[in-house]
Length: 249
Ligand code: NI
Image 1 (cartoon, rainbow, N blue to C red):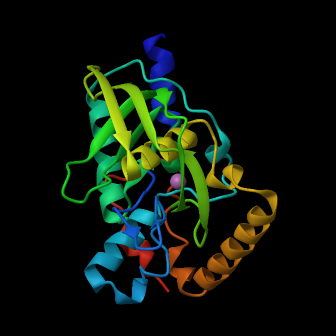
Image 2 (spheres, protein in one colour):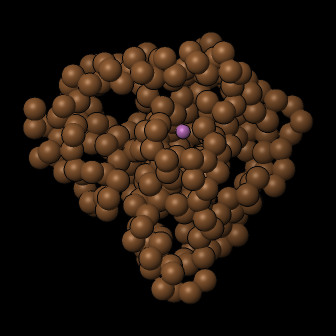
């Protein structure tokens, strides 16, 4: 692809990350994927600094209704410093948002890139151009959330084990075999790169319920969120979120 075209893409695509959250395998088989708003994570209970960082990171995450979440991301062809920065930023936003994974499309960037960290002890893994090469016949069901779908937690059935081919930040070939939460997060994020949301992976009746939960979460948000009518994160995201706008009220 021509360099010029690439430039244009870089300009059009703001970096986004999705937050998948840290490894939450709760006793009832509940896994919070990229959603940091489950009951167990009460924002009121976070220490103020963590909470502020999380809120700031979340401002960059596109939410349901934003058409970019339905777009198909394009393969990355240029492995350069911009890409490294993009991946680094995705990792940072994921971390700050208390997520365990994030896809570029969630930040409004149409690159086939994602980051994840299913175990808080692990380093963040970044995958470029991931392709699901193989998956087990065996399926597993667990609850997932999504940073782009506040308030939504639904049971999603997915292959229990996967093998994914991808590239790293410098273009090196990767082959990743994963199971459990890691397999789930990777599949969830690859879905994002194809414009697929967890709402598409559940029965219709549950989808209605999920939509309702999301509306409720959003209206709860509305009051304190006046302060969030912040810097259009959909444009060129600043290197650091702008706290000034965040606490306007
Ligand atoms: Ni998600």
